[in-house]
Each structure stands twice: as structure tokens, then as C-alpha cells.
Figure 1 (cartoon, one colour):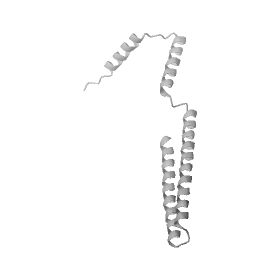
Figure 2 (tube, helix red, strand yellow):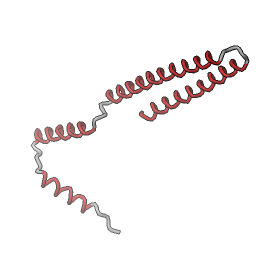
Figure 3 (cartoon, one colour):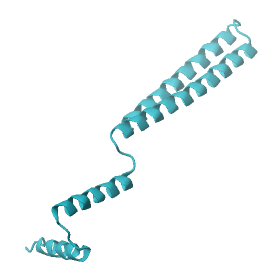
Figure 4 (spheres, one colour):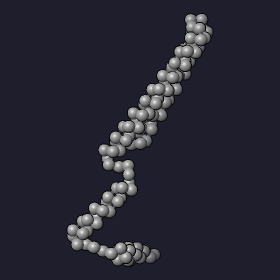
Length: 121
């Protein structure tokens, strides 16, 4: 999902760069033909870049907010809390079912499982 947003952002930046090149080329052509003064041409280009920068910042903020909204809807984002929450739920279920296994016993079971999974050739 994040890759999609990055691609959209990069596409927007690319389109802005192309537009900037076109604006500069048109302004330069108008200056060369004498239809626009150099001062006015520079002002047009400066205004364009200021506007573009402002729009870029707005766009990035919207993308950031949309990403946060999507991540929030899926309940992701803080995996440490997710893990702690899952552990607490498992412990609560085990307590209700009367399945209480000491940590040392659980580690012994894991050790036995890993040794029995060893494949000999």
C-alpha cells in the first residue's frame, strides 16, 4: 500500500517537473519574441514555482493523512502493542480453559519440538 502512495507521489513530482520545464520554455520563447519582458517572465516563473511548492506540500499532507487513515482502518501500525494485546488474549483464553503452562515447561516443550524436527540424512 505504501509503495502505491510513493508511486503516486513520484508521478506527481514527475508531472510537476515536466510542467515546470514547459512553463520555462514558453516564457523563454515569449521573452525572445519580445512579447514578454524579462522581469515579467521571471515573475511568472517564480510565481509558478511558489504555487507548485505550496501544492506539493498540500499533496504530501493529503497523502500522509490518507496513508494514516488506511493504516488505522486495518488496525496496524503499532505491532508492539498488537503483540502485547495478542499475548494478553492468549493468556486470558488459557486461563478460562485451565491451560496454564509454566514458562519453564513451555521452553522445555519448544526444545523437545526443535530436537525432534531435526532431519537426518
